[in-house]
Length: 300
Image (cartoon, rainbow, N blue to C red; front, side, top):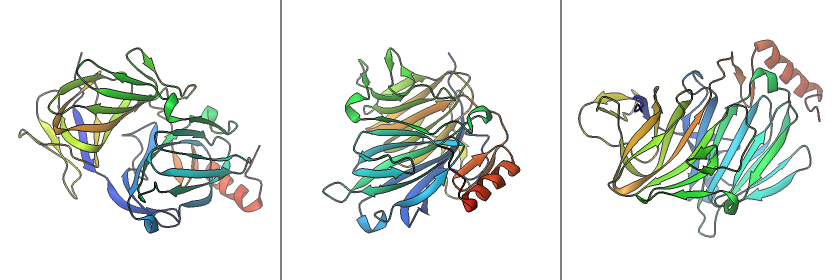
């Protein structure tokens, strides 16, 4: 077994999206090769309703999948196919936009006004860019949780953790999406497919993600990342991008640590990306926006 070295460690950055939603972006709209097959990760947590209630009004998607995982509050949604509903705390919606969909997502807070969740974008391979749109929506009670003897808790959204298999299936990038909680002070290793790109996003507590050679990566403002031999921590809102290997190692801090651990098989295909549409060539991208203007964007 080989511990994955840390390739980069950074902090998510405050961003405005949709109709004025205040959120933090862990990565997105830059070099896509480091996170391939994933394109973007947003952390939308807020205790001020005025900063999120405007939501994400009607907008198109083509060529990608969007994965929404809610921890607090609810997200009401509707789309051009007539689907509508809401996902609440602990629920997941995995939307395959495929050939094209127009939808909206409107965050609503819990009784205290708090809203928290994540949206991950995953690229679709060229062979599935124009597949029919569809959803996999999973309620909290249907997402299995594994508990190790050392007290580590893992919610398995997609892929598997040991013998526990997640409910989301049939995804092209063969992704693994885990919500991991490690108790205070515990050093934990977690297996990761050696052929996958992998990253962790810390959203509660803090801890040390260990390099193969011992040094730890340090989040730095502005520069993005640095290496050091001194003991340091990946804190709340830290993104850890791993290099190659077949497991990751984390040392939880005094309050424990909770993070998303996400991995997937790289597509290694050209990316032509503008806004909510991701294709393989600029010509395909122009065609998509031409179809939006002509009203021929939707195929089903």
